[in-house]
Length: 205
View 1 (cartoon, rainbow, N blue to C red):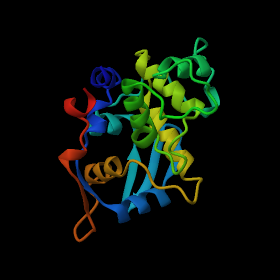
View 2 (cartoon, rainbow, N blue to C red; view 1 turned 180 degrees about the vertical axis):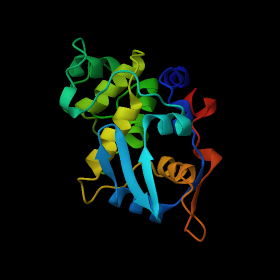
View 3 (cartoon, rainbow, N blue to C red; view 1 turned 60 degrees about the horizontal axis):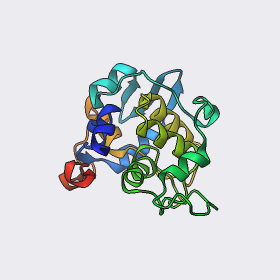
């Protein structure tokens, strides 16, 4: 079920990316990152990088379409009630809710929460509690509401550039962008994302 829901959202290709990560170049990319409307702009090793919506599509198959969600418009889905939805996700819906903990969720909901929490909009800390934004993303995935993931990724990237102690997200994606723009990677430190990191039918069944 989870695998089909992710395919419905066109996230499968993004989640299963493998290859080399260039941590030093990823840091340079983020330090030089600017936002010009829908275009991301950076500069790495003498190469000007402009990430348009067509570049996103070429690299991970995502398109700039669907519902745009960020912290400022969490009320966009009127029927979404965070407390009611969270209770519906619990293995024991009669449990008293004090915090929106990830621990008591049913299997499918917990897997999707993990993907949202650690991969799609990764957090720098507090990895046990879901925010309202997390719950809304999970709700949309579970209910097949098409989301604009390019917008969500760009919004998250902009958010983390304002936080000095935050880890830089999407390292494999940024590294593929560097390849796309033919940035010189010779003699750069590389880390490998192995196939075992893929989200496949075995891990999601």
